Length: 138
Image 1 (cartoon, rainbow, N blue to C red):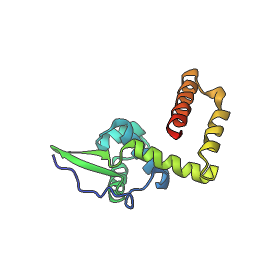
Image 2 (image 1 turned 90 degrees about the horizontal axis):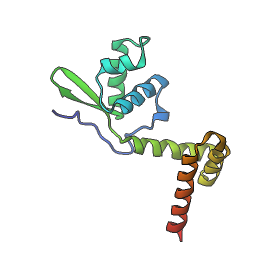
Image 3 (image 1 turned 60 degrees about the vertical axis):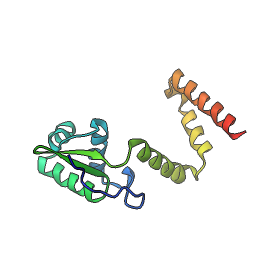
């Protein structure tokens, strides 16, 4: 089972924020399923997308270097080129740069401003991360 050769260099990789909304939905679906056929993606996204539209988007996303496929019998199984954590970090950096003037503290403060929406466990996790950052910074 051979992977489709796709460059994974940072220059070729686009973040999800650079994709059209429908393309982003397809990629998010692939991340959720980890590996999927066009039919599985179409089923997950609903009936308003035809199979040919999904296949066309998959081809575009491969050309953009976001997705890759492998052949399994007569099926093409699509997966993301970049690990989800890498894409998430890239999107978060762009968000912090755009809306918080590259200030991680301002972004964290904004999240804490939503503390009524955070669970006790999430707040505990944030406290632990802050304590760890302080230890590593000293």
